[in-house]
Image (cartoon, rainbow, N blue to C red; front, side, top):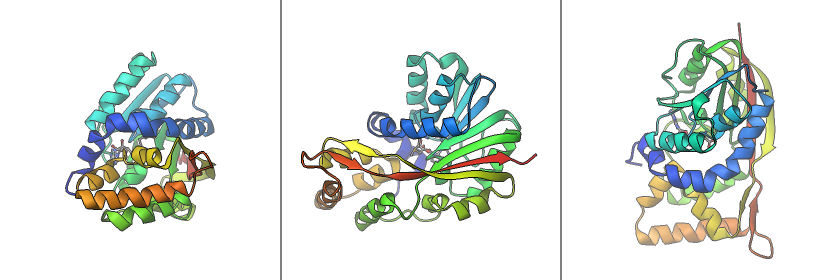
Length: 265
Ligand SMILES: C[S@@+](CC[C@H](N)C(=O)[O-])C[C@H]1O[C@@H](n2cnc3c(N)ncnc32)[C@H](O)[C@@H]1O
């Protein structure tokens, strides 16, 4: 992909908020519930996108919420959503990378990252940053896509048509053994639990149209010529049709891994 990852995510911000975010809100709610976020907490949402978990934390009464993302248009959409939700006074959004957070040491009680920090190309550095901004005994919660469940089959289809991104593989965070190893220097892993994050769409075509709003896939798809795009569309429609009921409605039973950890003191 020739487009920088931050630009690729920025470009899809509006579509992402329309098509992908609604299915991710229940996962963000589950994550924030595990973390028992409440009015005493200062929360940072790392790789916040359109503020998916940040707004859930604010709804739960967190006294201060900061969302960080490297895609400026995601932050613009996030700020608009916070305004509409009436929580803008307690929520702010900052541009920054997960491996160099624009936050002071020990400035958060809780760090949350829903399908976000897993993309950072240097997991050890990203974990060190999460540890730096958390207070001792601070809580960390993340969601990741395991490699071996439905999502892996989906990506196998994707990579028939698009080059696999070089470098870090975000699915490695979906393996609790690997996740524990990355977290270990700073965190005690308390929970590694699978949850369902189903995709529910009126048709196979709509399911694929929605998932094309993901940053890296969108950029790769845009770079294909018309024939290659048509072939990819056919293949992905077939994939989602396998999860459709008699009326054509798709319910794809994706599973995600929730990781909760505590910062060592
Ligand atoms: C799948 S979206 C998840 C967004 C949001 N957390 C949610 O649950 O809907 C991934 C997000 O991670 C952001 N991202 C990816 N790598 C990042 C990095 N190294 N630093 C900061 N943000 C990053 C992208 O811009 C995008 O908004």
